Length: 250
Ligand SMILES: Nc1nc2c(ncn2[C@@H]2O[C@H](COP(=O)(O)OP(=O)(O)O)[C@@H](O)[C@H]2O)c(=O)[nH]1
Ligand SMILES: [Mg+2]
Image (tube, rainbow, N blue to C red):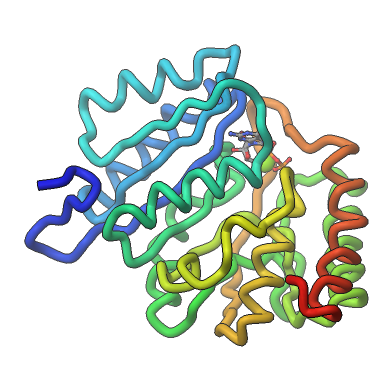
């Protein structure tokens, strides 16, 4: 049987995609935690961009113990957005019903994965949201970073009209049909604006987006990979999305 169409007798596992760049201090512990918590109900795909710190080597070693752990190694740092597109295509060649996004740095609590999948039974896209209601569920972020994130959320909503409180968050769960419906070829974002763009495309298709509250905790080890270029891309990307949809070119 074609390995790509692998499926077992029981319910197909869900897949969590984790992009990594220099996450050697986090990735081993995160993968062990996920495997211990979810066992065979969750497969994991790490997309590593040739991290110089040996992140991929740690994943390869864990693959000897965990059959549901997969790794794609790319030639260089090609951006968060393209990492997820690569992961989505990989997932759609297999039988996963639910496909998740998650950071490698423990900002996203592994204990919340189950809640995101459960919520996706009644939604097309579930966003783990830091800003549900009037709350700001962010722990240990520097004030500047919090203002940037909150500001980006308000700016995105003002420009696009999309009713999502936390459009830049990266802890999400998609039903596979959603990824089949949005044209992955058309996603233009290379970096972090990918999160806004995908939400916008899902919303414009009239699909159901639900936000569930999560607590986001700043990383304790390793460095953020957010760059000024990521911010610039997001600033013009929301206008691009708005204009493309106005002219029917999304
Ligand atoms: N493969 C890949 N992963 C990336 C890239 N940029 C960031 N990441 C990963 O994306 C996740 C979020 O990045 P992070 O630096 O924590 O961003 P922040 O939380 O917004 O400061 C982490 O798991 C990073 O290792 C990239 O260019 N390629
Ligand atoms: Mg982070």
